[in-house]
Image (cartoon, rainbow, N blue to C red; front, side):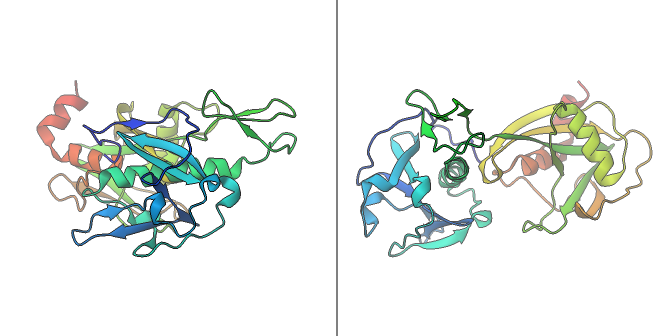
Length: 286
């Protein structure tokens, strides 16, 4: 998946070092990122030395991957659009490829942090300008003491199984048009397992058994932590589609599923896992 960048390692503790010439800068314009593709279609993020106006005070440290440090614009400068020769802005939704997994993960993580800083410049309780803690990744309000940590929204990915069939869907009214598994956000006061049952019934009208946890994934584009579950159908397999959430939902037999593991998303890894019948059934029915 996108976070699986081993043997390289992701470091996210807070740091207040000043940006240097070789450090990478992840620059956004709305939901687009400044990127370059070389002749091999590899993605490249610009270094600070490539910017026309190299103003150190505009940037703040985000994280490191091994020895490479990544910086983002401070919230008060995010509206300023940078132009770098040889680079262009591409939609975040297109920055999903195996060949540059490290860069994809860096872009997604930087977007997650940049959005959090942008949305919390002022205290939501008393409107005072927030200040960054010197000890941890946390903004606090010097006026009322409100502490604000990075937004991480829990959500579930659901593989609904009916013997040798897997339920696939397509979202309604979204930019992403490919096949996916059912998914949804966990609501307050709700367990992840309860989210699974609610989302399945709301979106396709099906009853299910007890969910079995598979794996999790950070998904920074939507500030999510995704929890993957597989679950067996319980009762009739007739689908009652919620057209506000889905444009399509249908059963697909193992070996004929029109999607495969892309090495990036939890959804696609789960589909690939289901396709391996022996491995999946050994795990699922254990």
